[in-house]
Image (tube, rainbow, N blue to C red):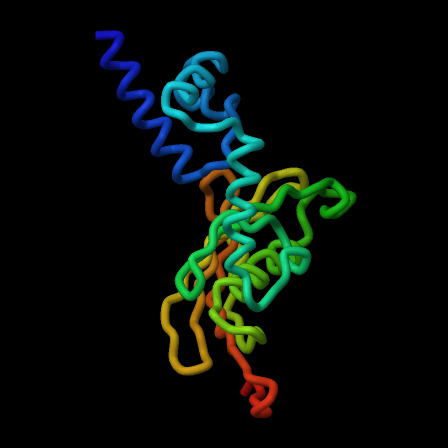
Length: 192
């Protein structure tokens, strides 16, 4: 019976790491109610590398697909990119990003992460944000990690409709629908 429980835990562990590859062994141990060494042993049996190697591999893969931005222009770290379809980024916030009195993160950091991710998923060399419908759903405390997920909803000529949802510990904190335009500067295109 213990073997069956271990195999099921390992299956769920693999799924969880696939969905969020930047989870620490400590977070996984807490989620499964086991020790950190147990998680490490499970990862070893499954052939899943440690967090540092997973994050380096993800970053290398994602950055290769960037067209509209450079890696340095991204706000947050690009984790996953399917150009023209979807992408994910993660941003570790710091106390300096928050309001001194309350510790609440300044909203422009959340927006900047979402905006740069929306630009990154669009398949174009020069990409601009044309229109944004955004909603901050709840405050984020400085020091928390924000995950942003972008999905292309529609692509109509040079215009792309991109939905970005940002979460902290799987709780939505920000949502924006953006009209992003891929322009060809040589043709004199502009955002209207």
